[in-house]
Image (cartoon, rainbow, N blue to C red; front, side, top):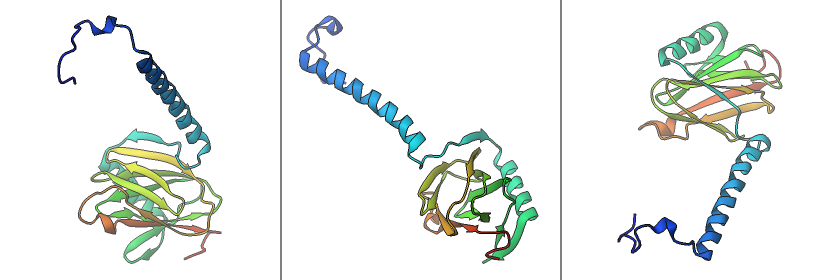
Length: 183
């Protein structure tokens, strides 16, 4: 917004100064470069996931998580179920008031179809140390395929401020070599 109106009211018919034209071309070319860089980084950057997103009622999603927990729980850890779904299956992870639910146990080298959603407010999903980051929104089911490649315990932290208990919101994914390992 200009402080004062232009002296010539039909300013768009005025010739463009050479310096201004150069900057317009630079800005346009930079925009084109950034556009193609995003595509390149998505394909070759190995950080951004190719995911699908579907609308879902939060209560429906919670019911799917509960059904998976009931079917595939192998043990409990500090009151949280540790779930070991079969390779190739749909795995549901729920973000809600200061927890990721349930704890997951996946097999190395096996593909899973991971579902991720929130039951209450927006959360962040940050899988460490591989640094995969996803914004988790209530009412949306984020679906992506994951194939664990590194054995061990991987932490999940919420990287989107979600309330007073945000700093305590963590989860775990165990990656094991074979069925029954780590239990």
